[in-house]
Image 1 (spheres, rainbow over the protein chains, first blue to last red):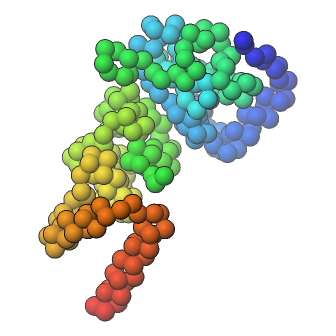
Image 2: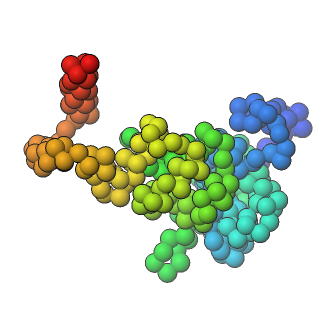
Length: 124
Length: 130
């Protein structure tokens, strides 16, 4: 069951962004260090080799909203894409109204506590 | 729970405004493996490699953050910190210390009492040598 996503007005989004910037990126310098902001907000950023091939996505937010997983190779090759992916997942943190459920139906494939992948006997 | 090596490393990195990827570039590390280090999925690196981390964090060899990271790294590797082993007199007393600890579980309060006693003894010794 996918929880309904509440639509926010533009002003409301600006207010959220202003609050985050005031606390975690007061200089407002560009390019905005989205990955650093995510970590300063208390999230873990976990690069996983082969994530895209296995998950069919560049990144994912864990069900407990504590971790953003992303494709390591993609991040290495395409910095802008990596920044977009982190920002995309970061934006889902306040969107997820029901703990334990992803807003993206593709991630219903994964167990509730997404533990990363196993490659042979090695956890990646 | 007290801070682990990985958590301390992450805290110090973020305090310096460095993202995980930026830090990995500085220390020439694979972000995926380095991330495991911060999350405690890999053991802390040996001293020679730790020196690269300290340099990237711009920590001097004598500052308290450096000493704390070295202590946490040694503990994470299952070793006794080198600063203790280098003191022969102190190292010689470790078996006695370990035997005492093995007598039973030590509560947090009791452990704090031991720390306070040692600290007081150290302060009074230091005062006596002035």
